[in-house]
Length: 205
Image: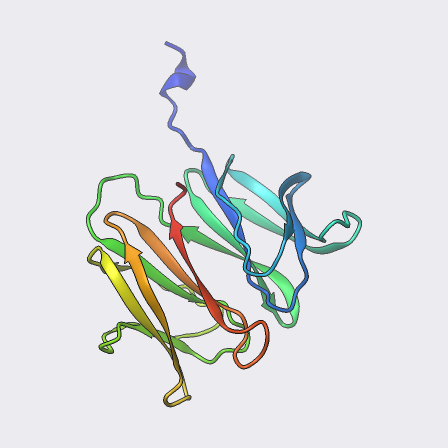
């Protein structure tokens, strides 16, 4: 038997999310390899396999390979699953890498995390409609942990810090057993493109 047949599978997975409401569409490269063309605000690419290592994330204006907007180095660790978020920081485009759940063992419950990617929103909280709090006072770019929930269909309530009576609902979302999810709040409060959300399944399926 060859030695390499006994080596563990260290392949990782990566996807990209464009979360800057005021930014144009971009072409995404890791080094010289394309990972998405014409990716616009709120677009999410599918997970793709990637070998672990250090990569240079390059964002170009869509269709203009000579117009480099951002270049940033990231590390992809072995056997990880990541979402690379295009975000705004100090009025410039930046990169935020999130480690997604990558658990292969059989588990019970659903798991949910909550991330504020709205650059002009106040602190945000997520609760159930009966005001049972799941995540409180989440600031821009803050990453929460995963919260365990029983598999079911849920309504969620998003509350805005300092704005009494201002809230939005995320209705009728099914969370399945053994799955991990992230709710991303994107867009702009009281401006266009308006505030919205993405509910994504994590884990590299």
